[in-house]
Amino acid sequence: MREHPGACGQCEQRRPLIGVTDTGNGICGPCAGVDLTYACRHCGTSDKIFREQLCTRCFATKQLAAALGGESGTVPAQRQDFHSALSTAGRPRRVAYWLTCDGVPVLLSQIGASKEEFTHQQLDDLPNTPTTRYIRDVLVAAAVLPPRDDRLEALPRWADIFLDQAPLPHRKYLTPFTHWYLLHRIRRAHRHRPLRASTQHQMRSRLRRALELLDWLDQQGIPLWELTQPELELWLEEGPEKRRAVRAFVTWATGRGLAGELVVPRAPIAAPSVFSTDEDQAAQLHRCLGDDALPLDVRTAGALTLLFGLQHTRLLELTLDDIIDDDTVVALNLNGHRLPLPPEVAQLVRALRDQRQKSWHLDQTASTTPWLFPGQEPARALGATYLYLKLRRHGIAPLASRNSARLALATDLPASVLADFTSTSISNSTRWTGYAKRDWLDYIASRKQR
Image (cartoon, rainbow, N blue to C red):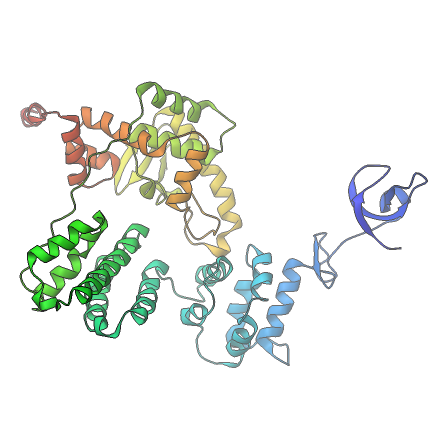
């Protein structure tokens, strides 16, 4: 009997159909009195058969062993950890898909034949896809590969590709500027903390602006060492505001005697201009606290933004360990400072924590960090842009809400307290208290009296 997928003409369940009723409709096995079982022939679990009458995990395990063991099909002893990490991964379909990607079978055969340790570089040589990143995360979580900051490690590779496309005369400036100045400073500043996407973007912008300046000097027939301040200011004024990112290159060139005494003014920090009205702010907060139709992560992120003006990058750095819950008060740990939460917001954070706790237990094979806002890849937090768009899609204005919350807090708090309260720099908090136009001399005097 040949099976056809569809809805059974008798029980109306969507199952494999093996026959036809008198009315011409298909009929499933149970209604026809036929006992059909769909179990994996290796492990016996009643799961969806992937290929060769095997479930996804068993098929991936078989293919992995064949690739690592070569003709013998036996996994070498030095690769048992590698094989175990991938065969027990929380998402076996990703592993099965990865085994079919270009370059992977050859890579695995080389790994099986080699007695050397498996390295990140071997995965770097493959296309940078979500599946490859997932496999890397699985191997890191299983201690097959050492942990590393992928954003930080990706910068030199991106820089080398960028420099290869630059004109040869420009590389004598751009290569040392990139590797001995930009990358050196970034590595030194991020020894103990992960690189943020904003810093990654800033480094790329600085390198691009440096190349733009050198291209313009070529067009004008001006050597770098003959560039004058008026000519530099002309180039800055003719282009967009982002050209001020060339300041790093000019500072580096001046300090090494490659250019004259040149100064690029810092880009002025524009005052916030987008705000919500008190009515809109209250309405959005009411939705976050009481609308069960909204996703739980949207309600939680929205409430924290509307009340405390927390930046999304800071929200996305929160882990389950940053939630302090003593059964009476729930607080967030923001860089060592406790932020107590109102009861209704605490209820949202508790619910999201419990939800993420269950998910993380299922994905521990691919992650060593229990994120409060995890992304599609378990080892990585949700992207800030994705969270921003998700809030917008559900009717919450992230930027306006954050600005309004910050302004309200700056009206009632001095800069030092605001900095601790919102986990921002003191300079940023000082600007916000300036926007609120409050004089805190009375506050300082009262503190001294106490």
